[in-house]
Length: 364
Ligand code: NAD
Image (cartoon, rainbow, N blue to C red):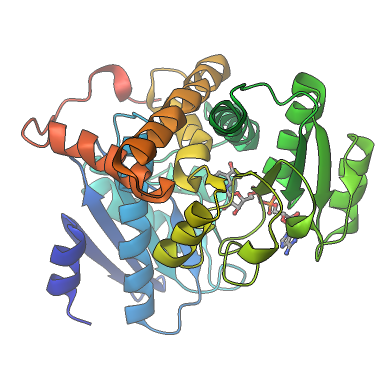
């Protein structure tokens, strides 16, 4: 892989290789953009087959963070980190603290958080070496579990889609099929049933998740049937790539709006297919920005859940803007969402703010 070619192609500002054989650390930090603010993105720990695979992942994920932050209207750029290794066997205090020292060396241009293979406790270990870390527990002055905020944001995106599809943002009496009743899926189901008066169908792999959802009022269907269920809205809240050549022809809904990252297996092909079939797709990175909004609020002098929820409510307007661009430019909504993000980055490009006001607290 030609690193400089790929960095230039995707527009990355900086890629840092972190190596310390004494503690077994091999990591890559990719800062895609600091045009709008410091690059915030989680650190993923994964047993990559080789360095190229890890590099590919971190370059792609960090660019995605730039778009997510820009679309959400946050004073944040985009970045991500990967640690090469098995999180179950290779993680140690020394490795995490060494990673924290690398984060500190970037002076705040990169702010880390949890991701696949890392957790709240790991963030608290990293906190010993740098303050450029979010996703710590509420007991440590952090933001705690992001999933209620994420689910609330997804709900706002879904309501915006209903406004466009049905001329009314209310989901009362609508039927929503949720794929994945985990942290976000269950909160989403609860908002839909209790606050919106919607009917919710749901599916999950795990009996405990199914039981909790049934108690919350969800009507359980099998995992093979959930995407094909006759309903108004499908909400993918499990894994990525669930919208593909096999699933899209089966959809019987008018709207797709869920929490999972990278729902389109192939953006151009599957985003185009949804558009052609008249299914309104609420782009994932716009709708699921509540998790990012939540950790962003940790950078304020003190974390406040009400403020995070207020900011997540604004996802309704962002999603409406996406649909406006999609209609005006006659493009699929995933293209419109990228345009919206790029417009904001372009408008700010000349400014290059280096002081982010009250965003960054002076210590915790
Ligand atoms: P989670 O692991 O708590 O829940 C996912 C659930 O999906 C699990 O219960 C799992 O059993 C189920 N599942 C997996 N495959 C399935 C299948 N084929 N059919 C039905 N169910 C299946 O994860 P989460 O925190 O709820 O996140 C859900 C999705 O949203 C993920 O893609 C995540 O990346 C994304 N996301 C989460 C947040 C957040 O705040 N947690 C923020 C942004 C994006």
